[in-house]
Length: 272
Image (cartoon, rainbow, N blue to C red; front, side):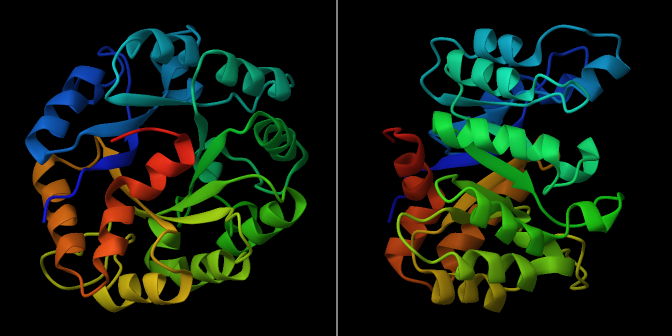
């Protein structure tokens, strides 16, 4: 059976920031992996500044993908500034469909005042949020996955994905949040991103077993999971292996179709 693939979670950057992470390189990977469409994230401003680049990251992305129907853009916000609602409003005004937030890398509390300002605006504007979940070398108190239940509680119309589903260390916490928020229309989605296990059989930071992935479907249903690339940190071979793993799992065909694009397309109003 053929599965039209619409994937989440591709980080793109200008060539001088990361030569292997450009829009052109993403398109090459999509062709190699049989991916019809993908969500790409604007770079984080911290990475631009490290290279002396002060341009607006969201305007850059909107311009970079303009007219390309195979790519859907998500913005990022600069949490060091106070105009967070205005930044979120600009993301929507540029035609970007969501926001990527990496609480550990951006060193914010997911239940802090600044984060709540973004959630309020995103909920009002109908933007989808993709959060990194899992350890990432910052104070765990700020981004412990169980706290996403507070996000869902305070913003009942905000839709978001928990990318990596908490990873090896926090899988059950992430699953608990997804299962706890079970009322329709659904808010919280499992991001099946970087799911491949290491070749030596020992778990890595993002490793999830087949039984854990099947449990996500068993406990949350066929349409609460979204496949992600984690481009450019994963190459075509590993992404092809991720796709093959999903196709080979003992889960309903409806779940495979939903994971590989159906759920994301419905959430963002995109045809694949």
